[in-house]
Length: 146
Image 1 (cartoon, rainbow, N blue to C red):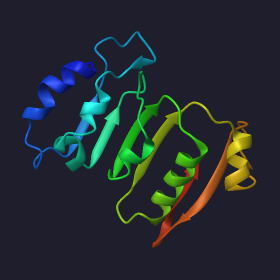
Image 2 (cartoon, one colour; image 1 turned 90 degrees about the vertical axis):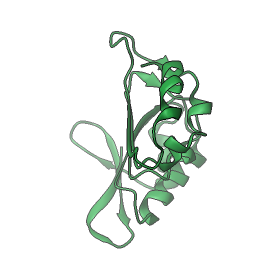
Image 3 (cartoon, rainbow, N blue to C red; image 1 turned 180 degrees about the vertical axis):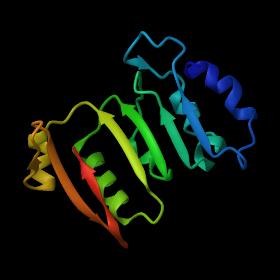
Image 4 (spheres, helix red, strand yellow; image 1 turned 120 degrees about the vertical axis):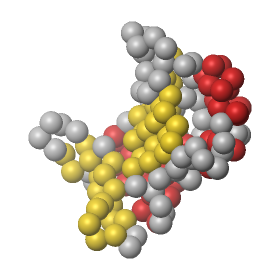
């Protein structure tokens, strides 16, 4: 379903029962489709009460990354994120008692900007820049930003 179709169905689902929302585009051949109606979607109780959200990466979402901090697992392709939002996400993730996975694809920042706030990155063999951070109260996992 596209964004407008989601708003025709989602409000009628039980917000206390619905735990996982997965949104896929009707046309898999088109990339970078704007997810229309996202502003209304973000205000629904179904969105606020869910614990998992997966929005296909063919969709581009225009929203503040902070709107997604209540999820345990989320994957989203944001149109742009600011350096401030990236720092807020890192801080929220490493201190959250519930966040398990946050797959964020975004435009607008480069590695040099992230290096200014996250420090010197690890350069893996594929040429990707990566940062690793300890997660509060977790000895088994780390936050990986690349």
